[in-house]
Image 1 (cartoon, rainbow, N blue to C red):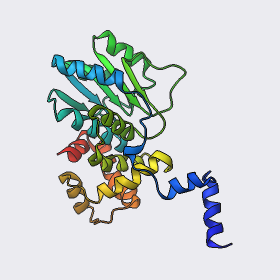
Image 2 (tube, rainbow, N blue to C red):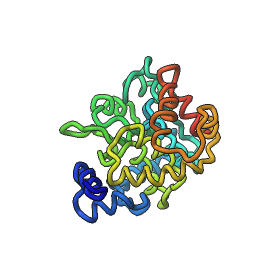
Image 3 (cartoon, rainbow, N blue to C red):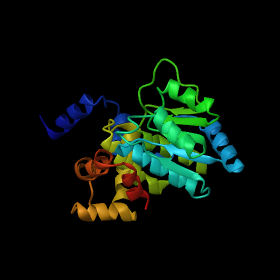
Image 4 (tube, rainbow, N blue to C red):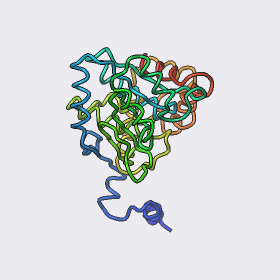
Length: 265
């Protein structure tokens, strides 16, 4: 077989047979040119209403790389203009996986009036009801497989199109009305580490996110690169086998909130 025949076979194995699909595979569009997979209007209006009222908002993430990066993107975006917003990463041992009653109680005890979940919540029907019964609004941003019906949240931004960090990026673009390119580095970390198929939107996030990652100015990531003895060009290998495992490890060693602090410092 010739090289072109081998490439055609590999592309076909990935379901890429049309000229358009093949062209996008080799030259993916920039994420800023991709339409959001959901309508953010209701969530934006609710968040702005809580900001206007001066209420405490908590971003409820997860302790893996995707959850940490999604939390970082959303928290930094809101925190720029509103300081009464805080991140919450569940403690793996004490609070367990996903949106839990223990985790909600922790947020409610801090005075939360709005909780925004990222990378969890789409199947947490009882927990969402519990949250709203405590007079706390809730917005869900999630990509996991859903059940037959959604929880009764105030607003749901759901799509299996990409990972949670990608969904957070789309939402923040809608919220700010401008593409937050500086966050693509975090989306690339999450996309690779969450093992989503590197096709379509995900391929765009990784291509342009790796470019941002190689020029990152985040002190925490730069320190991590130095400690791990890696230098640009940073590739998907470094993300998946060197950087990602170190960020994931904090949730198993002590508390994944430390990985979030590392990204956001």
